[in-house]
Image (cartoon, rainbow, N blue to C red):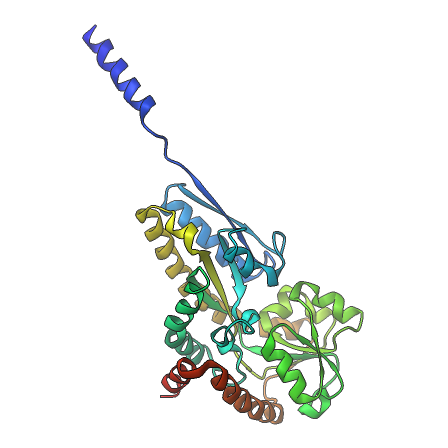
Length: 322
């Protein structure tokens, strides 16, 4: 009888104990499932799931299936979704710090891009915090190269063409070379090329393979213009609503995903470059004249950026150049 009473008491206590609540976050991305950036998002989500023992579930929505690429940042800010990934330079019109990594020829290698990322991170975190967002991690795309339907020996060959713009910097470059900037998202680029809406553009080797751009464009110039970064951000209120152990798990997984993303990007770049050639593209890895002309444009755009970024911008650039 005593044993039965103990068992009943234990059962009553177990029934009265609160069950562990599960939190679910949707994580939208504007990039395809096959991209290394989205694959890294899945890895991050899996790590969070394991570290929290299923307490926090993150569902990745790739290919702009939940929100269009240019809507994701705003969706996280407005709590339409708790977490999201966006390319930082797409928000450059909101604040200069978002456009730092798309200044042409400021940081043209992975080592330089990571140095710039580390130096600017406190300023980026503050900018995002002021918007109700928390930065979890960044991961760079491979260096931006020039894709063109026709051969390009100098910037003069770009005059009068239709150049794809995906951020203020690419629109400004188009203006500098006398091209017409055409705003079009990566997911829509193959159709834009097929219909003649765009004739050339700057993007990474990864995009060339992932979006099968080689089916439409036959010339690639490895000008290493800049290494744009994607950022994974979380709504600050959503993050604050998590318990301390879950917050720590998210931050730890994010730090690992960031390091992993940068490493993956560098590994993939050389693979993608080789594959572009295999797919029939003419890959020019010298492009010296083109690089010199674009570097002049980059110098002008650095000065322009520093004027708009103020003291914080000057601090970042001066520290980077040391």
